[in-house]
Image (tube, rainbow, N blue to C red; front, side, top):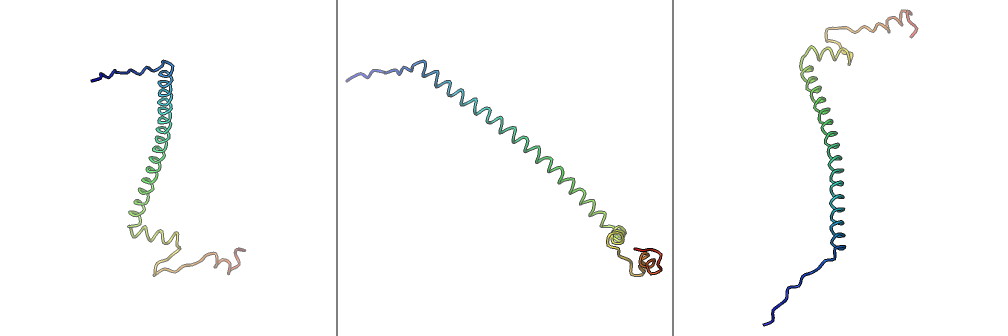
Length: 107
């Protein structure tokens, strides 16, 4: 039976240093790339958190409006001011029209 000899592979020092240098450059690139990605994600997270706060504030305002409009007196006040509505037992007098008819204003 023949005995097999163990062969050792000798790598030239320049090739070994080149491979190590390539790995080092690659890992440095990965590190900086991941750092930039992390910073971008942190900025995006901060922006989204700001948007969430703004939406929560808007929800709070809308809930306040819901409670405010649940009061009949408040609803009546809003109808009078914004929609110029009147009660069923009231009469609307338009002062401008009345004054125009009397000739007191030129508008």
